[in-house]
Length: 243
Image 1 (cartoon, helix red, strand yellow):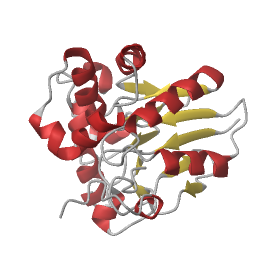
Image 2: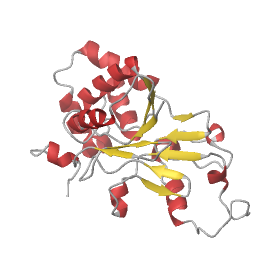
Image 3: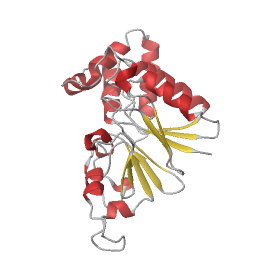
């Protein structure tokens, strides 16, 4: 059995289908989606429909990202968050034009069922962004950190590699879990188009919303699978490349 972590999709349905084809998924593989299925490219609703279907036939863990929180709020209330609208929400709303009210209701249920984090039997933690409690995710006071925090990754990236794990200087957050897999922050921000490892934190968001690729990583072998650069799959769109 493989365990595969999949990074932020951001409405790139074509990239997701291409990635799944490259993965050659078997029925005993576990797929862990790290959130942000929507907002960016033109097929967010189609991504949700596809992941919903995949979760019925395969062993899937569905983590909730910040963009998914915004989309869930819109599906529930019809209210449009102005920040969300400017950061991919407009494209997501348009992607739902051909979906019925019943479809939207089923998608809302799906968003509501998403997990904020997952810890597996090997003490590997999966969440969209990060956490701040030195006691772990179960003691996190501000649940928004699970899908907004960037300090976990920043700390891991800037940490002095000479500090031993048994040192008092070693961050407690990094001692708690064998490995931590996240999305949220594109590795392309650091001029890297592959998943980024910093200490025991793995960032699998390789910038699919922008000029990057959609990525998956085999947790045991660390083999990486990627789509083509997503903007090449949507040549008439700009995604979230607003500048």
